[in-house]
Image (cartoon, rainbow, N blue to C red; front, side, top):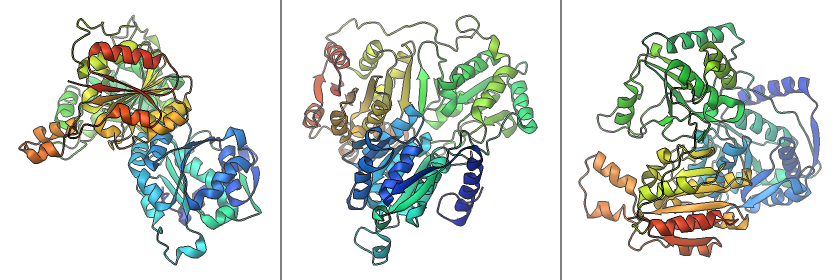
Length: 575
């Protein structure tokens, strides 16, 4: 596949071949202006119309071009974020829901560095994100000014595509390559869908720049297609293994396989039903389109020993659009691979495939078209609405379990759940099983602090869908600035802070790893001295806020928040 992580000749050779192929299918769009205007016009030509920005000196001409560039103007939306981790998390949420990239606009390497944690999450989620990073002017960089650093080296840790523009007339084609090769993975071989384009300051203000933007590819050129005899034979063998008499199959699905668009998740559910297979999703999934009418996938347990124990029940496993699961950490004497089966018993339809086509062929091979939800689906599908019952003691102290049940009782149809609840939200997944159809997003990469920015991006991508962010209090403090952007954009987000006032996941890890509890352990896991006043913080950022200590108060606060437009926050003080 060659090295596509940097601006080397292998990358440029591939991009040149790609442009030749695309030229056969459509004409280029000519763009002109100063360098920054060409950049923004190229973004618009490639369908990028949202920029989550925290700009600085080297990006000022790009800021100006958002108004003056051809094709931009009113069609380009800029969202100011008060920290770069908010830019990155919001672009991730936008990409997961819109299915196309948003851009971030970041100031030099320090700005990119601030964004890295949530760009890591975006890479693991395979969200299409385009980072536009300003760089020192070419003629000053070698003098090592105070903010100078190795931006490319940093970018490669989270990017499938990294390039520094070398001349102003290449800006337009570089934007197009970053989106095609990085964000859209037009080879089908990328590691994630994050692309980073680094633009020197002097190239942005250079005048009389011209460029051409070729059409984007409609599908990965290198994807394995069922039209190929070898791929078809593989999928036929997979169908035979799943339906072998006496087999105990399981399906582990992620990515495109868990989305309602293209009908993929429905087909995967019917494949599971036709084969009598247990359907699983990732523990830290990217997006599940869940609820009534959809399949219900069991989440793979978080801790590796539990996951191995669960998957040991099966003798054949199909992995669809997911990496083979491994342990999140290397615990003492703990497992690495979570599927304890020989290689020949594990079938993988990974991102090297045309996943939609592969699912469709497998669907037909196993006879899944005969499956009718509620008739012969073996319980794989949720066929009727069933929400948690009302509490018997509404005046009882609010617990994590009661909070989860209340959210599932109140959440509207078509909503988007952004879930960074960690330990407090353990019961939500099953409590919401019978809710009307909704999308459920999780903290995919494991780096905490994604919830509020992810919710912002979802609200920008889907302005007519209510977003509910179930947020652990310790994690939320990593990116609390997102509340201000939610207020500025009047985003329809309800943030529910699970205020247990401790890093409870670390308490579980201390116990699991048999580390003796001590005053230092409490000191480094407690958030109650002083307690964090979430309602006051939210109000300071311009977000309406309330505090709930009982089930009754939480029910009332949630109903009120869902009944008004704009952002709200509920500080759920859990007992």
